[in-house]
Amino acid sequence: MTDLFAFGKKILDNQAFSKLLATELILFEEGKAELGLIIRDELKQQHGFVHGGVISYLADNCLTYAGGSVLGNSVTAEYKINYLRPAKGESLLARASIIYAGKTQATCDCKIYVINNNKEKLVAVAQGTINKIDYKM
Amino acid sequence: MTDLFAFGKKILDNQAFSKLLATELILFEEGKAELGLIIRDELKQQHGFVHGGVISYLADNCLTYAGGSVLGNSVTAEYKINYLRPAKGESLLARASIIYAGKTQATCDCKIYVINNNKEKLVAVAQGTINKIDYKM
Amino acid sequence: MTDLFAFGKKILDNQAFSKLLATELILFEEGKAELGLIIRDELKQQHGFVHGGVISYLADNCLTYAGGSVLGNSVTAEYKINYLRPAKGESLLARASIIYAGKTQATCDCKIYVINNNKEKLVAVAQGTINKIDYKM
Amino acid sequence: MTDLFAFGKKILDNQAFSKLLATELILFEEGKAELGLIIRDELKQQHGFVHGGVISYLADNCLTYAGGSVLGNSVTAEYKINYLRPAKGESLLARASIIYAGKTQATCDCKIYVINNNKEKLVAVAQGTINKIDYKM
Image 1 (tube, one colour):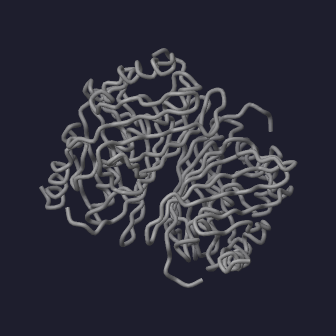
Image 2 (cartoon, chains in turn red, purple, orange, blue):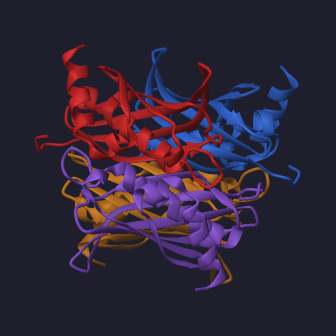
Image 3 (cartoon, each protein chain N blue to C red):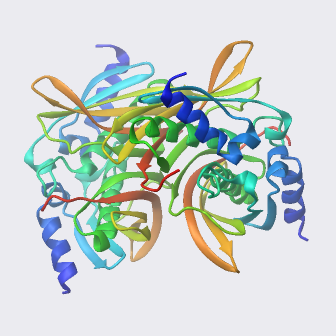
């Protein structure tokens, strides 16, 4: 486990909401991050699909991780997400990477997949801005 | 309670994820909707603020309600959110309304406030597209 | 003419692209701005409506003006626009205002109208982030 | 020249605003499109860079082309753009492709580059929704 990955896991452990959803850090390297989530009934909406809010949460968090991999402590300033298909399957996987990073701001994108029988299907795409923050974590 | 409001409450009851977060429908009229949420520790991130993913979820859901108030069964196709301030307080309130609605699509905006001692503070703004869907709920 | 308005007009005069399109500064106050544009044939697309790119340009520029009214020299960092209706008429009017401003960044929204026989019709809505810049104009 | 490319060129010829800017269709295949633009003084803003509105226009148009390559006659319903760097150079190049397409709607992304001495530098990224339209062109 790299220091960066250990740092990333510690942050996730300190996010009560991520613990409630049981989010896992899968990859955390300079410029990219992956977060995963087992789909369970309490994450669904009225049609039996994963609630869009869960997908948004995962995208938002993964964007921050990607940006934070080079900026350090960071928050998502803004993002946009397009939902492509209803998400039904075993788990969600978000993959974010940095498109461009300055000293205090990074622009990142994120693809969110649903996984079923080891097959990935793209369910949403997001693009956003990550801001470095000064206060300590 | 109007029929529309009762219909809205039933949908929220059928969203397992909204029950997990304990979201409440506060207002549901033609062209607008309000959703509220008591802030509790398990909705927070590592700095003690409400997790951005909770705010996104609430915005996304409230946008769908606003659009759905005229379109009927609907989903959020896409949206964009700007976070303005860290959210710290007693509860969250999202207020969404329709900017323009066609027959199958509506463009809506949403403001999300944190409430503390009966004072509202704006913490995020969102804008998105709601699509009517055909399958039954 | 206020100093701020004179300053705004000078910037517009120095934007060659805004001169090409013949954009006019209509209002420029602390926290808000309005830009107008006479619709002529060379601003249209293949269906005879104003080209979306013209509407985007006007929204983008008006967002920067709104943010710049409190930040000083600024650029649009990012924005999102939803087109609501085809734009057909005599002129375009963009109205932007600040939703929230910090020291170096402002979140603004903008509504874009087409005007015909003194009647305004909303054709697009935008939301974006304005960043203060350091280099002189 | 393929039929699709010829069709694409005809549309561009019929966009008066694209003629004003002297946009060129560079590539138009199923699922992707490229548009180019020679940078000249009248496309600039007050700092000597290409005006953001020109970059937005090119992104918007290229997104529509990408979506239209499978949907047929289409318009951009909405998009979001992040500016990464000031654009200074000889020409602009936009490359858009479809992320996901349904029957009446496609989600596309677009990267916009500035070209100088045959070197590409990324200056903006965009993501948006293209809607099929019914009326004839």
